[in-house]
Image (cartoon, rainbow, N blue to C red; front, side):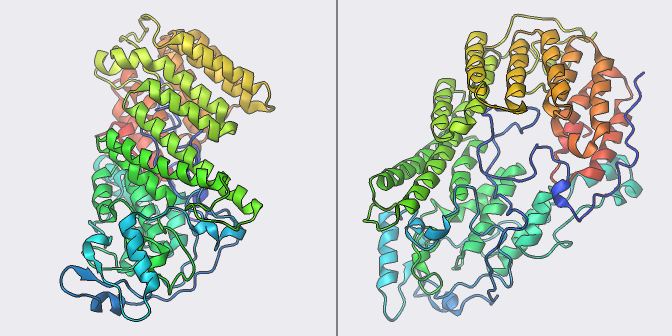
Length: 593
C-alpha cells in the first residue's frame, strides 16, 4: 500500500504580505492579455477554456499617475437632465473615486498603452464612433449654453445585477468533510481585509482570491453610483469606472459565471454608445478623443458568447473588431491618423501607433483562432494561427508546436475514441491534453491504433526544430523534447514518451508539465505505484507551486484506481489546498462532491 502524501504544515494560512507568491493553478501570477505561448486547447498548465483577458499588474516600482479626485453623490445634472421618460442630459462632470491609486491606469493590456509622447495626441483617436454616436458627440462639442439631450436608449446606464457575496468553495468543502474546527483554520483575503481601492483589488487578484475581487469591484462601482439596483438609471463614466467593469466582467468569466457576466454586459450594448467616449465629457477630458472602453474589454465582449454556446456570434463580433483594427492600421501605414484624418504626428509616434495596432490585430486573430478551434473548424483554425505568427514572430516556435499538437488530436477528437471515463466510469488523467484510447483495471493499457495526424504533426515539429536552432538557451531544447514526447504519445508509445519527459526533468527538474506527464505515462505502462510516487513527491516538494488543478485531478483519479481509501487521501489534499490556494480554486478536481 502506498502511503498517502504527508501534508503536515500545509494547512497554515497563507501570508498576506506577498500575494504574488501564492500558488497558482496556472503557471503565471500576472494575469495579462498577451496571447499564450501555444494555441493548445487544454494542457496540464492551462485551463480547458481559452482564458479571458485580464489586466496586467503594474510592475513594482513603476511610476503611477496620481488620481486625487473627489467622491460625490450622484451628479445633480444626472437627476435634473430629464425631459420626459425618453430623454437624459449628459452629465457635465463625472467624478470618480476618492484617492484611488491608478494601479491599472494606462495599462489595461499590453497593447493599449499609448506611447508617452502620444498620450494626449493622435493616439487617443482610437476606435472611431458609429454614425449615430458621432452625431451626438458633434452636438456635445458644439454646445455653447444649455444641454444636449440624448435618448436613454442610446446610453449605457449599467448597474450591478447581483450583489450576493461570492463565498469560498474550499471552505464549504472543509465544513462538509473536515468539520468546523478545520474550516476555521482556512484564512484567505476577502473584500473587507484589503484597501478599498485598485490597490486592494490588485492584491486580491494576485493571490487568486477572485471571488473576493468580484465583491470589491461591486463595492467600488457602488461608490460610483453604478451599484445594485442602478441599472437603467442615467450615470456617468470615467476611465476608472470602465476599468472596474472590465476587471469585474473578466473575473466573472474566469470563474465560469458566464450568465452573470452576460447580464452585466447587456447595458453596454455594442460598446459604441456616446457616453463611452471622451468627447461626451468635454469638461472632464478636454481635448481628448476616442473611446474610453479598454481594448481588452472589447475582446472579452466578443469572446463571451462562445462560452454561452454561441461561437458563431463570437466569431462575428471578433471579425468586426478585426475589420476596424485593419482599417486603422491601413490609415497609419498611409501616413494618416487612426481615423483617416490628416496627421502631424512625428515618425516615431507613427511607428509606435503601428506597433500598437499590429499587436491588437494579432490579439484579435488569436481569439478568432481559438473560437474556430472550439467550433472544430480545424482547417480555418490552423490558418488563423499561421496568421498570428505574422504579428508575433517571436512566438513562432510556440505557435507551430501548438498547431502540431492539435494535429495529434484530430482523429481522437473527431471519432470519439474510448477513454477511461467511459471504460471505468472514472475521468481519465490529463496528460497535457491527451486522453488514452482505452485503459483497463490492471491498469495495463490496451494499445490501439495511433491517434491523430502523425505525419502533419511531425512536419510542424520539424519546423519548430529548425526555428529553435537559431535560438540559444534551454527553453528551445525543452520545447523540442516536449514535442517529441507528444509525438510518441500520439502513437501510444508511452515508454518513449516517458523517456523524453524524464530527459526534460534532468534539464529542468521544476518543469511541472513534464513531471505530470511522465507520471501519467507510468500509469499507462501499468506502473500505478510508481506513477503515484512521482505525483506525490511532486506535490510534497513544493505544494505552493504544484497544487495545480490538473495534477490534483490526476492524483485523485489514481487514488481511486489504487485503493478503497481514496476518500481519506482526497481529504488530505483538501487540507493542503486550504493552506495554499485562494477562493477561486476549482474544487471539482478533488472529486469530493
